[in-house]
Image (cartoon, rainbow, N blue to C red; front, side, top):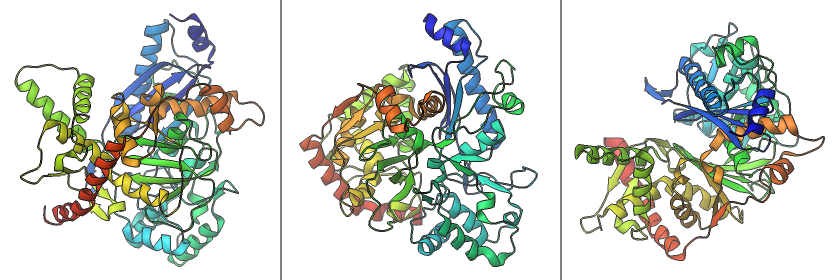
Amino acid sequence: MDEKVKQAIVEGKTSLGIEFGSTRIKAALIDDRYSTVASGVHEWENQLAGGVWTYGLDDVWSGIQDSFRTLADDVRSRYGVPLAAVGAIGVSAMMHGYLAFGADERQLVPFRTWRNTMTEQAALELSGLFQFNIPQRWSAAHLYQAILNNEEHVKDISFMTTLAGYAHWRLTGEKVIGIGDASGIFPIDSAANAYNRRMLEQFNALVGGRGFGWKLEDILPRVLNAGENAGCLTEEGTKLLDPSGVLKAGVPFCPPEGDAGTGMAATNSVAERTGNVSAGTSIFAMIVLEKELSKARAEIDMVATPAGKPAAMVHCNNCTSDLDAWIHLFREVTELFGATIDKPAFYDALYYKALEGDGDCGGLLSYNYYGGEPITGLEQGRPLFARTPDASFTLANFMRALLFSTMGTLKLGMNILTGAEGVRLDRLVGHGGLFKTKGVGQRLMAAALNVPVAVMDSAGEGGAWGAALLAAYMRLKREGETLETFLADKVFAGNAGVCVEPDAQDVKGFEIAMERYAKGLAIEKAAVKHF
């Protein structure tokens, strides 16, 4: 037992990060050396209900309570003390989507997550009005689509927010949002660190004749920057987080952030010319820019770091879901013969097998589209595998094709950023489930994007650790200390991770595979239409 850690826990000299991921709600407790000293996790899944991808809000609270309980159990098991005090808390969650509430704080319609692709008309109209790309998953697009659909609930909206903003609100009573998460609700003015005033006025003028009793700025959460105090845990919030009553109220909170922002923090990718790739259920690359893009581009989202700097995001709705489904099928086969293999070992074995495959996957073709994919113009998805009769159909090539499919759409978007926009990167930092097997996802991502990819020891910690870092920054920062300096000089000092350079043969193989991938999109579109 580390007595220093025990004492820090007793004295509340810790920071807690909680993240609502797409498949897990994770809690991470860190000390003032920024190391994870305890963790807890709860697994959950979205549901397709009435054609809408959603999570029930009851599941939000049962999940966060289970995650916190397992964290507290971990603390008691390791250090022999209850988790009664925490120095600061940060909440993070999947960005975007639509959560709308009435004046009585009643949820007006089920949560519409980022995964839905039902707002094409709204996204196109707002993008044209603002001359700024508004993706389908953004909260503003969901709101305007509901208006276009003449949905009855819109007139009753008192507050709309993201999942992180919702959880923070219920825990603290504060209707606020971190600027990174806010940038997925509505366009941000990075100079003012606020919603873009011109575009707010344009939106209000657009819907002004419909008789709503609100203006957009009145129903959005207030924007805060990293390092600002965003409220404290209330007595009511304590009951929601820890029904056992051990944790005491009054814990300060940092601004709630989206998974993109906590991913940037967790990879030290908040300064200009830095970038990261987050790869799990969805996949996205975040590049902090030195200057604005030359024009609005439908494939590129303009968002912000937790400190408000402009960042370009290439976001793809689909990443590992299809890959996970195939691996689950393979596990069923082994279990049929009585074999019991540890899940991480099973993943590792199949991932490493992919490195034995042909550079171009032997002519095999896979699309991982569980849902729609705006970058390739698909409103719906169909997981699909195809091959010609003479393709080299081996396990190694099959696994390589599945792994490449997780990166294919990202490659199409990144080509625009690094090509037409001339953005250059020294390296990217990878994090998320795709990078857990040492060296595999990292090597193939380097080939796909033709850029060095680094992975840190904290790659598996993910957004919960990033949220804890943002909480620690609020609690521990010196006067005038920027988030960039705090992360570089304190958290990541001397830790650049393990970097893999692109292998020339891998790069060539991926280019060939991408030509097949681009041509084969017609097959995927036909599958959506006919199957």
